[in-house]
Length: 119
Image 1 (cartoon, rainbow, N blue to C red):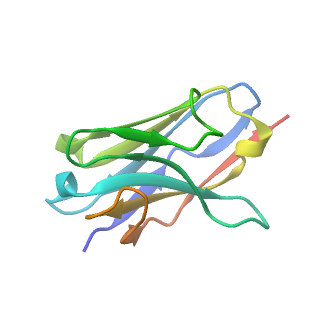
Image 2 (image 1 turned 180 degrees about the horizontal axis):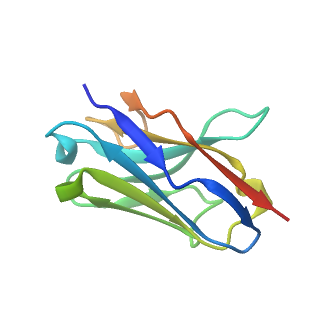
């Protein structure tokens, strides 16, 4: 069982930056692929980014490539999402996810942190 707690969301102007953090419980954090998803009002949840548990390979949705950076610190059981050049269309509830076998899905979800980008 893994518990995930996101933080770092907030209100920012277009062009600004935010860094989201996701702290995981347990001693097996390094065994999980970690990912970020987001859900905007009236839309389905969508994949944003993921980081491989084995070699640290990273994956990004086309919409955030070049603007967002995912990273992880296994010693701190934490995954980060650095978001730069934010756009109003990035406004959403951002969820952290963990999966033991696939980087593009989730066995466990956090409760979400709200990101709002004003124009």
